[in-house]
Image (cartoon, rainbow, N blue to C red; front, side, top):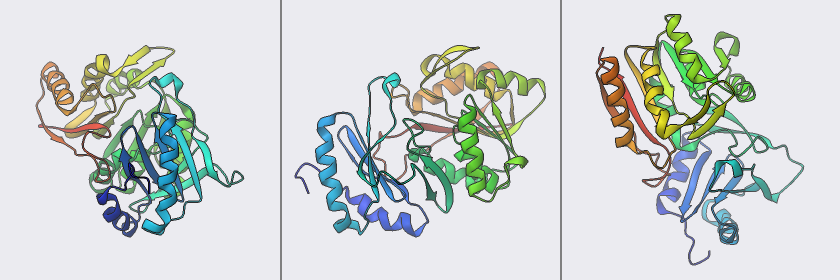
Length: 308
């Protein structure tokens, strides 16, 4: 193993724990400016600089001896400074004839990944704890906004909730419906709306819809034809206010962001202001990153439960 690359001791310990729980999608190690993830039978190397790639590949060569795991393929993904420069992972090692669609499991729940679909293959590993909470606790009516491939919705449906998933991308929602099928769930019993979340909240409020659990995990930056630019630092407060309009009494909201300029305290501050403007009160429960993510890595998240 290269001198400046090492397998973090917690990852060695967690490897067997994850596998015993039916999880084969997790971060193996985090280095300065790079990380390595296991995604089922494959590895994904993410790096900020091309100069890190040889070291990561050298590290991967030691993995079979350390863990007994031999990856079918190794993919590489450059981490650009600007979102506009994001590209799909590229195959670095392995059989190029294998399909780019694969399936991973998380505590026995199945999720489809597609390495050709864009920058993200389809599952954000840093939300594992929050998905686990949803799988164990979601009941009643569940709203998943910016739902992407609907992993939260799948967990809620498995818990018995009636789900509504909203995302601007119809293609992502179709992948979400496929995730329902992977887990023996009928998509026809749930709702999927391809729409701008900011326009959907007022419509849901006018219809009198209320939800017991809401996931609010917007992108850092996006644009839509009807509402224009969304920038999470500027617009998260308005988004939380809109979500509160459709939250049932004593309902819960997960407020989450990958924006490095917003931490948990910032999210709580934004939520307190939204509560004040709506004349509501609530309690906060920050969530720590999963065990395979060092502190400071991954999304900033806080659960808000309304008092009434």
